[in-house]
Image 1 (tube, rainbow, N blue to C red):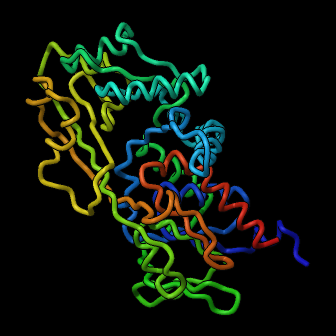
Image 2 (image 1 turned 90 degrees about the vertical axis):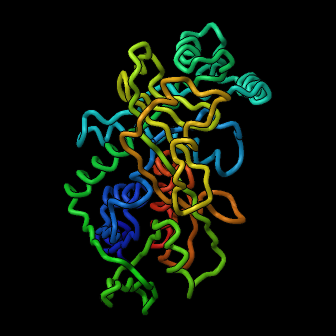
Length: 360
């Protein structure tokens, strides 16, 4: 009988999808000694390129159930992976803290109750006399913003993370094929992934990480999985107001569901993932800046210097994400909605454990 190590060295794994989840699975599996091939026809167009990278772990308000278990595991794993990836990019880091704000009194009361019951010293209510609140109220020309701060949550620059993963995968000689897979099927003990050009790529294991397109590949295998598209949008806004210094604001924060990241004294990014659609509306500026009763003058006069979007997937009829064994040697990891970057370490750990069980 072959040893587990021999099975690892000889097993070929195909990962379909080159977003954060696909590349993170490749990272974990490459470290274990597997031969890995990533297949994606449009690597630069996947939804991970539109991610802002906010890691809402400890401040997640449901502290039980599968979703929390995945978050908790990822929270514990991320520092280890950051240390590892810094060998390939010393600047990669988690920017802390993360601030969640609201102008709704009822929602603020829920935040207060959550912090009181969580008994987590790294979670604190931000009162009106907090320097963070003062600076935000001043910049946004309002008086009623309140919220919470998580000293352990933060943000990973998604673009930098993807580039770092690319550098690692190149170092490990992981194959990246720019092909479109139109069908997968099992033949004897191997999986065949058929490209649009009618080429069959053989592997021992297939992992589907290609969001909405994963369902199409499962049509002949399973009809249980349903996904709906979710539009993630972001824009960079340039302002022209000498009295406003955006760098006086926290590094990353959320107001009434909109994520805000100041980039320089006169530029900031605003993003959100909350629209069930596969095509952005024309009024992107109005939609993403409509998070206060009254917009500050500088924001009303701001100019969009850059905008982008990504189509994500959310499970229809079951919790997010979908991490499941479909058949022996066929796994699916998709439907992460807003949390692909946060949950990537827990996902890759689950994938590795499932493969170990299969090959043992």
